[in-house]
Length: 341
Image (cartoon, rainbow, N blue to C red; front, side, top):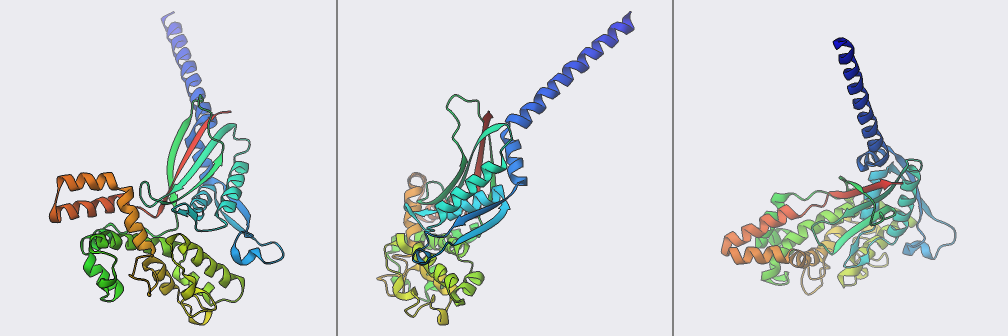
């Protein structure tokens, strides 16, 4: 009788454990955001989108499309970067079209997964930056649903910022500008902004090289036809929010690094970052100067706290360390939310 009772209790325990494991598996398979993240990472999708919003194509007859292949998470990251705005102005006219196409492909990849989902891919080089991009797929969860959430990162395709480089640029702005501008530090907008402008130039250089990889861009600038025209258009769109006319030095009809027979992608990228050479000051209208100002706005509270606690060299070192810690360009943050269908 004792043996029979023991066997009965063991059988009941096994049954309860089995039920618990079965319920846990169902919850993981059907409701958990991490399972959706796994599916997205494993799914290879194809995205076809129109280029009709690009300036050189708008006046052409016919249809122009581009197709991209990759993992769902990778293309979501690409869409966030393609959809970047500078101070509210989109720098790639086809970014919205690409985001929509990626979202539709992601939704198709998850059909039949028995869960509702919402995915947000976000790129910004530092918190509250006025240069940022977002891509989404799915619908926002209802307010009363029990939502499971997971966050992961994917490559942005933009070079990483070396923390030592940004600290050095901030702390040694005079030397940095001498090297960068060829002993023309008199052209930096103002001494008090020189450190942030130097740090902004490091960040801006990485961003511009991400959008215009020098080797591939050089080939496009030297090419004939639409490829060349699209690249020039992308440069002009990039500087549009920076409040100066870039076409005087870069349009194909003028001399400059974007002219086919004088193509120089490295110089073109440097001009975007530092501003045009005949401006009142190097960097006045360049991306580096713009980021330098935006850093001070985005990190105003942190900088104010440092100003209260430190002064002199220690204050500068604390701000340099803050920038090194806050700035990251090479990753897109992807947040996945799921809930019961």
